[in-house]
Each structure stands twice: as C-alpha cells, then as structure tokens.
Image (cartoon, rainbow, N blue to C red; front, side, top):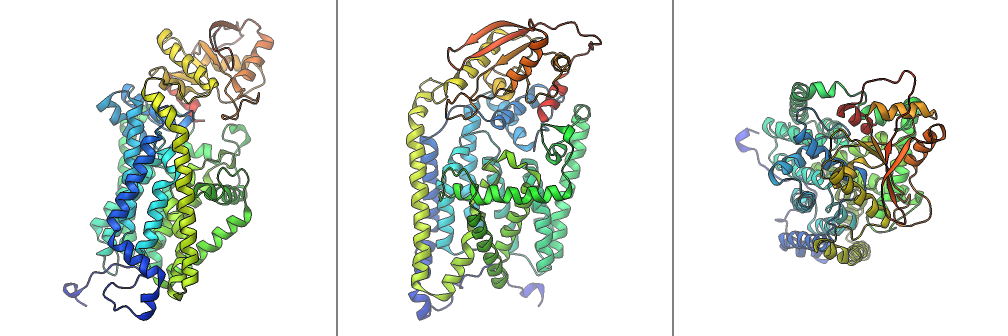
Length: 585
C-alpha cells in the first residue's frame, strides 16, 4: 500500500461505531451503558473534575504537612534560588523543586500557594488521563476509572500538599495523551521521529520528577520489540538519551562544584541494607529480589486495597488479595494480547516497569502509600479490564450486572470516604483561613512549629545553626533558616558524637517530644535526639544550657551547646554542602 492510500485508525478492541448492532449487542448491558456514557463523555469528565475540586477545596489543608519530604521540596526550591549555584537538590528527583523555585521567584515564599498549585496539577492530571484513554477503552469503563481517580481520598489528600505526586500524575497524563495522539497516526514501523523525540523528552521529564520513571524506557523498548515498531523505540530512546545527556552536561557546568562535595548519591542510599547505616553495606542480588517480593506483599496485598477503599487503613497484608490482583492482571494481559490493544499495552508495560523499579529500589520499612498511588487509574485497568472485556464478549447480563454492581459499590465507598475526610477537615480549614495556623496540629507538633518560628525570629544570625529531628519542617516555619538534622546515632562514643556536631558548626539543639504514632499520645516518642544527647551528657554533664521552652505537655526545649575540650578536635567546620550531604543520607 502506498503512503498516499494509507488509512489512519484508532487501535482499540471496542466495536466500531459504524457496525450495525446485532440482537446480542442491543441486549448487552455494557453496550447500553457504553452508549449512554459515550454521549455524555465530556460531561462525565467535567463532573469528575468538578467533584474533585469541590472535595479538595472544602477539605483543603492549609497547613504544612508534618512529613519530611513535603517540607524538603519547599526547602530545596527556595535554596536553589537563594544559594544559586551553590545548591542543587540531590535527595531525590529534582524537577519538582525546580518548579517550586520558579513559583518562589514569581510569587515569593507563600507555601499555601505552592499547595494550591498541587490542586491545579491534580485537576489537569484527571483531564489528560481521561483524554488519553478516551476511545481506547469503552466509555463506561473509562467513566468508572475517571470517577474513581477523581474521588479517591488519597488523591485528594496529596493534592493539598507539596509532595511530588500531584505534579507527577499531571506529567504522566500529558505523556500518555501525547503518546497516543502520535500512535493513532502511526504507520507500521511506529510513530514519527518527531513524535518519538517529543515522547522521549516527556519521559525525561517524568524521570526528573520521579526516579522510578526510568522504568518507562525498558517498557517502551519492550513494546517496540513485541509489536515490531523499531522506529518508535529508537526515536523515543534517542529523545530521552539526548535530553538526559544535555541535562547532565548543564548540571555539571552550573552545579558541578557543589555536586563534587557530596559523598552520597540517591542510588547509594537505595542499595543499602539499611538506608541510615551505610556501614552495613549493600544488598546482594538475591536480597534485592527478596526486597521486590516483600514490597509486592506490602504495597499490593495491603496498600492497593486501602487505596481503592476495600480495606481502609489496613495494617497487615492480605496475601490472598495480592494473589487475586496478580491473577486479574495476568488475565488482563492475556486479553490485551488477544485483542491487540496497543494503547493499553503501553499503559500495562509502563505500570509494570515503574512498579518493578520501585519495588526493587525501596526499603520495605518505608511503606509509603504514595509510591503506587500514581498508578491508580492504570492499576484499575489491570484489575478489571480483562473481566470487563470477557463479560462483554460473552454478553451475559447477570455477569455484566455483577461487575457493574462491584463498580457502583467501589464508587459509593470512595465517595463516602472522601466526604468523611471533608467533614473531618472542614472545621480546621475554616480556622486556618481565619488565621489560626495551628488548627489541626496535635500539641507536640504545635509546640515544634512554634519553637521553629521562635528560632527564626530570635536567632537570625547565620552563625547560629540549630540541630533538630525535622530540619526541612523547621526551615519552612522559621522563614527559611537553615537547620542541621539528627537522623541517626552514628556512634556510641560521646566524643565522636560531639565531633559530629562540631564539624557541622552546630551551636544549638532543639529537643522535641514528637509522637511516634502521630494520632495517639501513648507515651512513645521519636527519641533519636534524646538518645544522641544522653550519650554525650553521660560524659559531659554541662554540655547543654537551656535557652527556651515551649509547651507544658509534649514540650519542646532549645539548648545552647557548650563544647568541651577534646584532644585532636578539628578546627574546620561543616559547610552547607556537607550539611545537605548528611540530610541526603
């Protein structure tokens, strides 16, 4: 066939709209629902976005999260502007701090505005993800996936904060929207070079936003191998390689001096047996494989079913559910192979590639739901598309009604959960916007934040460096003052611990009583700083002098350090780069 006569068509397994309906298709529940949803596709999309915005705005958390990473991204964004070119975000993927640094240059230091952009990013993620899958899966199944995406309580929660997830799922939606647009007009060898290079650039942005997105590259190459689309694989790979190489050249040119001072990379930390104890060495190959299965059990057998609302706030993995997810996913892959749905193969390989990278890289004890939350619409496809297609092809009304009932139950459960979240948050949201910035914090965190603010107001000199357990949180609440972190106890020797503080030029220590369980005052606290100082004070009782105290219960104390004379004590002090290197550990 000549190029002139080639036809363009969308590659999906749904019946053509021009096909004359048969008696079977006329009687099909799924076909009736597809027809109804197809006519209202845009209305369903905008209703879903509107419902998300309503739930997100009226449950909006105007406070900074107590999580480390939420504040860390803001800290890095500000420092990349204030200390340019003497600072670069190396703790994880750097693109989101770049975005925050741009927002800071435009709007100033307004972290509520940074959080508001996360709401916008999430709304755009819903839009582009829906548009990417429109006409690639049946309209009814797409409506289910989009609505589940929009009303999910965890999606709503992360849309309030400065984690990278909201920004990432927006980029992810844009990537698939762009990829499928080019795929629809592709010839037998794949998408055009222009399309491949652009998609390679978008994958590069995904990797800069979340390191695990590197799994998209083998996913694209496997797709090219399976469907013999060599040009597509080469063009996407070339686009990614060019952007990646250019970025590292620019990074080395501008920030090379700073980066050369760091002793640890993100990969170093991920390969360790214990991320906080480098002396234990790295995991072996067999231990990495075991890590993968441990994380599958944790994230799929527990976290996934929490995300979709079947087992809210699950505390233990349910292995049978993890096995059921695997069987359903395998059946979906079989269905995709049988139907030759190239669009959904892209999504399946992408999801599996990034999941594999995440499960190999992450320590089991991190256990963060947001790791797989970004795959919500895609995991729904893996879970249900195979069954949906099978029941549709069999034209069995009872089976189709059963799956429709399951979809309805999931939507009702998730809407109910999100409205309960709104009801719980709304009173604090009102108080926050009326000026009570502490409403919603537990007393331990309220005291911690007040102490950080006091330090920012009363110890402004750069010669004063305060060590604490949550330095990024203190950085934000102090108005941008640099803090040093005490995350571990690297030695049982008092002199070594003193030297560690002295080398960083730490002058003060903030000792808080932060709850180990944030939701319950049970007497257990995060006591890393306490144990660190106790080891020193056993040898040097006068090591600390009280400076300030906030709170009568779950109080926070600020101490000034009185350094003892230690033989062979070095005269040098730590730089900002060395402090940041310690935080990266």
